[in-house]
Structures are given as C-alpha cells and as structure tokens.
Image (cartoon, rainbow, N blue to C red; front, side, top):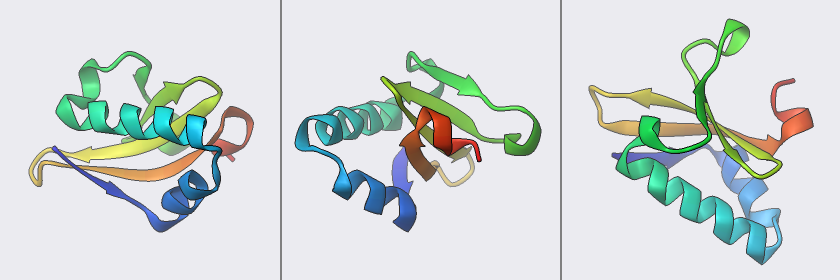
Length: 85
C-alpha cells in the first residue's frame, strides 16, 4: 500500500527529535506492508469511526485505509493526550 501523510502530520514529524522521528518513520513503512497486522493497530470508535490508530510509544498515528485505492491516509500524528481532541 501507498502511504499519504497529511501536511499537519508531516509538520509534527519534522519537529521531532531524530530518534523519535526514525521510530515513527519505520512504523509507517511497516504500516504500508499490511496495516491491520501491525502490533498496536486498533480500530477507532465514536467520533473517529472509520479510522485506525497505531501506537508507537507515547505517540499515536491516526490513519484511514482506502482499499479500493490501495492507500493509507495518515491524518494525525501526536502525543497520546492531545491526539484525540
């Protein structure tokens, strides 16, 4: 699958320290291989219905899969406490 990262998520990734950025980039590359089989991936409910979250330490990645297009859209990346607001 192809990964498409939203502008706000890319901006957050650019501002991270190198070590955290490397962890997240590696997790996103693994996400492209098979999104639902990755550890830490969980379907969201309620307001975020249709999205999945990937847990990477204290950081969360919210993404939506479109199987017809073979694309994973990464919409939000941020700390656990702020990402769901």
